[in-house]
Length: 213
Image: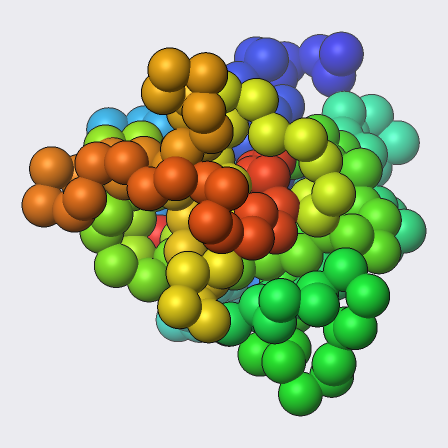
C-alpha cells in the first residue's frame, strides 16, 4: 500500500490510470462518480483533489479530460494490459443458425470488455446484444444497455436469456411453469409467459454493461 493514500484513493487512482490506458483519455468526474456509485460528483472531485495534492495526478488547465496519472514506483495500481481487454461482437438480430453460422454482416460492431472486471471468460460463443425496449426493466435492464451472453449454456430458472421470437432476438427471464420452460417479461405491460419450447434460446446473460449518459 502506498503511504499517504487511503484505500478508496488507491481505487480511484487505479480506475483513472486504467481508463487512461485503455481509452487513451482519462475519465471525466461524472464517469468516476458513476463507476464508484458516488451520489454526487463532489465526492469524486474530493478524491481527485487529494490525489493531485499528493502528486499522483497531474492537471492541465483549460483542457477537457485533463487528468493524467503520474507513473511512480510507489503508485499502487496495475493498469489493465490489452491482453485482458477483449472485443465482443454485437449482434442486432441473431440468426437461428447462430451456433453454426456466424455471418460478418450480422455483426453491428464490437464492445471492448475487461474480462477481469466483469468476471467473464470470453470464448467464440460470447456475444453481445444492445437492449431495445423496456420489457426487462423490472430486472434493471434498460434500453441502450449491452447484455453480454454465452451461447450454448443451459439456462437455469431465473437466468436472463436471449431468445429468437419472430426472427428477432429478445431478452427475457427463463422460468419454469408447472415443469415446463417459459420466458417471462419483467414489465407488466408485456405478456407474462411465453412457452420456451416454441422458441430458440440463443444465449444466457453473464454480464450487463451500461453507458452513463
